[in-house]
Image: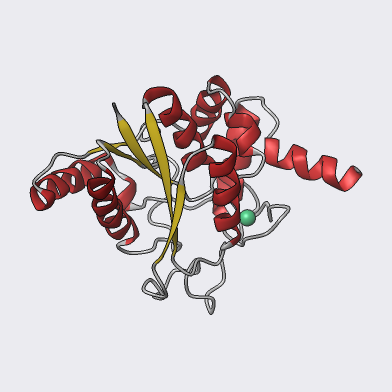
Length: 229
Ligand code: ZN
């Protein structure tokens, strides 16, 4: 029996990965990290989405370990605002949280070992993550090798979105049973705003992906309907 552990942030990408895993693996569970992120509301999203997917879900509290310089974890620093996705600067975003995926994959590796899971699923994408080095395939393969060595057991790290852009991620979500419905409860905005602020890096990329795929964002649609009701 194949068994996967999905790192579920509660955002668009990890939600898509969860439903991708449900079609590919016999057994799926989800793991979420509370790292004192500004957008803590995503923890509620992750809980709701895991429930919709019908998978066991755990939240691991990492405490304030990533307090550093990223505006996602240091509330003295503001999240940058932009007018549109085209004006996003290239290079490394200041929202980068150093070591986040190293630590997440280490904890997930330990958990996968205990659970007897063959694979960890992580929703990283090389294209859309503001140049984050820990979202690149090179890092993932090295981390996979480190886990295999340190655990003396091969655990695969699957990254189904790593070479997809946001438009292709939307198209993948459409092909997965129940995924669009779950995306209505996902959270992306770095500012933790509901409805989404629409001006942060994460909001702009999400909106552009849905626009390019010519699909309405189920989250935006849900909030619109709730306001109208
Ligand atoms: Zn935002």
